Amino acid sequence: MKITILYGTETGNTEMLSEDLESEFGSDHEIEVKNLSDVAPEDLDLTVFHVFLCSSYGDGELPASAKPFAEALGASDTDLSGLRFAIFGLGDSDYETFGHGSEQLADMLVKHKAEQVGPRLIHDAQGGDLAEDLAFPWFEERVAEVEALSDAA
Ligand SMILES: Cc1cc2nc3c(=O)[nH]c(=O)nc-3n(C[C@H](O)[C@H](O)[C@H](O)COP(=O)(O)O)c2cc1C
Image 1 (tube, protein in one colour):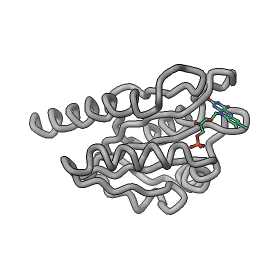
Image 2 (tube, helix red, strand yellow):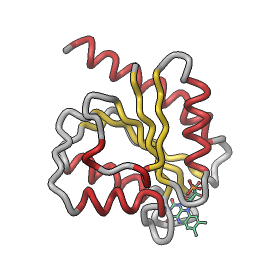
Image 3 (cartoon, protein in one colour):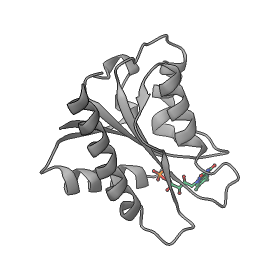
Image 4 (tube, helix red, strand yellow):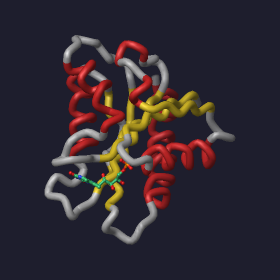
């Protein structure tokens, strides 16, 4: 399957996780990884499954590399109908605003009529799991869901 992974990061953890996903699943799928800072909302190919990875920063804000994309999307009436996406957050439950960055991004995408596939999962830097231990099975489940949706169509 063609999959585009888009990451929003402040200090690079989300970028590293995106690269880990590409290494793990790149032999089974055609995966492209991009920083959200290099993407405009109107560039999204609505026929491709998009996986967003996004941390939180400041007081539950989006990380720096996701902000221009979010600002452009918020200021536009871009119609994302047909776009299927899944979203994985990186955060830290020491903050009251745990996972708010990925939540904001998911809400914006849905507001612009994209279809969210499966639950948003958030890796907690306070927890004992490595991000990839949560993200790898989550990613496989989301891909299986999209394959089932495509087969049923
Ligand atoms: C200054 C600072 C502020 C943060 N604010 C939040 C926050 O509001 N909510 C949250 O869930 N995590 C917060 N975090 C945790 C980061 O989201 C987490 O460390 C994540 O792995 C960073 O990923 P990145 O390197 O891709 O940006 C914060 C971390 C720092 C250093």
